[in-house]
Length: 224
Image (tube, one colour):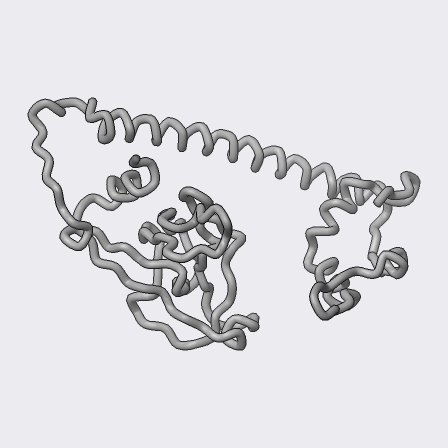
């Protein structure tokens, strides 16, 4: 896609393609096939788009671009901090070089001795094909090898149990994965602040530890 420079700012078009309005156009224009859905390349130039003046497009793109730069910088900082946390955990609890390690006793336990688990809910297609209900935290919310993703949740309009509800600080783990490399199985995340009632799907379990939750999270994520 090459915009006409005197009518359309390419950065504005880039951000427009992420918008709800554009997704609605795609939903209306997509051709459903027996095996795959597709967009007609011949009809694509006729897709509608609402454009503000070029100066407004550039102003919008500039502002969104600054936000993207901040997100990218924060993402890099988070990655650095996660690597530091992993190295600290391994230094202290894998190589056992923490302060006072010589006098610290250790014990072999089963996970059942120190945790309680709650399995997430199963659902039907009709219960998630909706804009109503509560937020459904599922396997797509778990980053490969650990961490939380905000953009993976769905809506769920059905019945759930109190122990399937998650709130800020809850520890969850992926227990199923259909991808080839199986990176989500055993991966954990701590729930961030959640603005609404949220429940977990059957792909996840909620872990309620009898020991320090942050230590257990670090063990699952960085141990090995």
